[in-house]
Image (tube, rainbow, N blue to C red; front, side):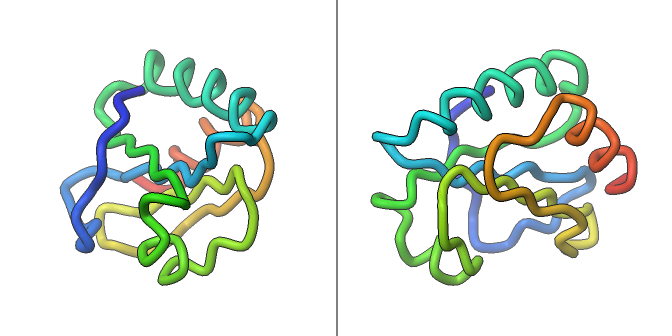
Length: 100
């Protein structure tokens, strides 16, 4: 998964996976491994990891209260999935299928 920051507009032609993480978060490492596997299986999706300390305004705007939090935004800009904690590979793949 590339570690990139998306603009404030998440509308694109494909779903976007936003991974809100923090530096000292053990469950974030588990979530990162899962997202790496998802990115390998579904490369056409945009992935972005956002550190809540560096992206505090964005995290607050998104209503992030704990890390890891993963949100999937549809191509139309609607949040279609949110998981606090580390979701399973299966949960992520099902959520992405619903986002397209």
